[in-house]
Amino acid sequence: MKCLVTGQSGLIGSHLVDLLLKNGHEVYGISRTNRNKIPGSRNFCLDLRDTKKARETIELIAPEVVFALAANAAEGKSFFSPIEISTSCIDTFFNTLVPSIRTRKLKRFVFTSSIAVYGSIPTPFKESNNPQPKDIYGISKLTAEKALKVMSQVYGFEYVIVRPHNVFGPRQNMSDPYRNVVTLFMNQILKNEPYVIYGNGEMKRCFSYIDEVVEIIHRCGFEDVAGMIFNVGSNLSWSINELSAAIQKITRSKVKPTYLPERVNEVQQAISDHSLLERVFGYNDTPLEVALRRTWKWAKAQGPQKYKFTRLELSHPHVPKNWKSRA
Ligand SMILES: NC(=O)c1ccc[n+]([C@@H]2O[C@H](COP(=O)([O-])OP(=O)(O)OC[C@H]3O[C@@H](n4cnc5c(N)ncnc54)[C@H](O)[C@@H]3O)[C@@H](O)[C@H]2O)c1
Image (cartoon, rainbow, N blue to C red; front, side, top):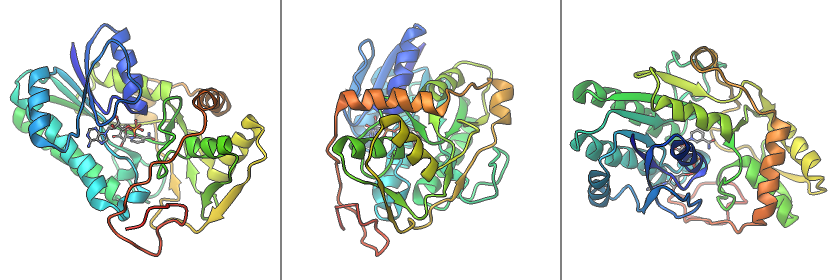
């Protein structure tokens, strides 16, 4: 099949391209950077918020299956740069979907949403719950989800929505200062500098290794699951303090965390229900320690990375003190 992966240079996208190629598909990628180049796929480097360029490129590709992953998933940053984060989720989505429909070749559109759509409703979050996102990133993902359902009804293509959470592993962007807690901690350890924990560090997350997550997203492109929404990730929850202890053990580091005030509107318990995922696909976790070891081995090979701060759109007393760039 002719497949398009947007965000192919990112963590999930690059592993997905690998898997699609391994399964004999013709793979095209679009993303804003040239990180994680995968030989065998044809890649276009452009900003998908540019409607004209997106249209020209996607009409040229005429994909049958689209995996839409392009987004800046910085939920904490989304309060202080709402235009950047919302357009990276919504504009990239429409600028991918519309030309894909125009070519009349589109069979299925797999949209990568997020656990962030749920907000702080009681855990574990079920796909049938009424989402109540509490950050601009989650609101944007939910908007795209709703638009996708309506557009699918009108234009007759199939869709699948996945809501992953806390995915990590080799190829994660270590130079992003706003997200990716696992590799943020590892990068600081490589620099021999303290890493930051916000609040008391007792927020719970289910860390999910890339291999399992990407396999599910791949299967969503081809199996009999059209019109479904899946929570994707691990069942095992860890506090940020527990994650910190696990990373210290694996890296044998003496670098200690620094505690900064809680981040504004941060969800404390991000735990999804995976009964649907397990019933339809099955899901076997790589144990966290094994997954962290693999990621650490990769991170060490990369060496310490310089952070790429961007200018924030708004200033606010709650902008974390370790975010160097101000509005
Ligand atoms: N990693 C996670 O824990 C997680 C959890 C839930 C959902 N997701 C979603 O999965 C998707 C991929 O996440 P990831 O962790 O691989 O992210 P990533 O930051 O590693 O990669 C993001 C990709 O999107 C591309 N991109 C961003 N803005 C773009 C734009 N304007 N135009 C073109 N390309 C653009 C980047 O170039 C990159 O290739 C995102 O949609 C994210 O919201 C990720």
